[in-house]
Length: 178
Image 1 (cartoon, rainbow, N blue to C red):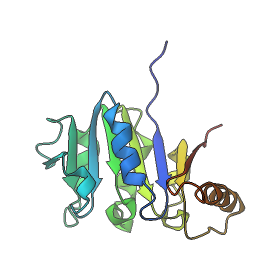
Image 2: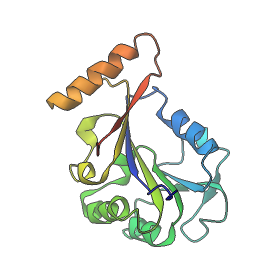
Image 3: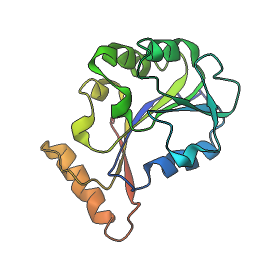
Image 4: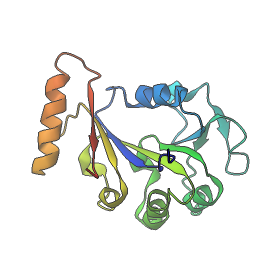
């Protein structure tokens, strides 16, 4: 049996729908190392994960790294140094600026070469850069508040929002390459 190829996954849902807890639960059974990039360091659910720097990452099984707004080479360095694991961007929009789009595209576009599963978390479809759709293979959709104008996104959102009427943490996984 051939090993599974690494994939890029978008996780979309309104605040307090369970995205972060979903990732934490998923990583409990993940065999490789995991690194979560948090934009401000205030996400309490990662408090048991070791906080590291770009120089010290890779030494612990579960790590978090605070996104350095002032380091123009943060994403490029992350891409060069982190391999063979899960790279999670919690609240991705705060880790992206127009000047680092190419570095971020390099991370999700070349994840197979470095054997990295990439997870990008968003609150709505409106915040996802267009280039993500080229590389992402999976969408995990939680309840959303803002309804996207795109017909396909709107249909997916309505479906999950209907499920969330009985379970506020409802989610549906869509394979985007099928």
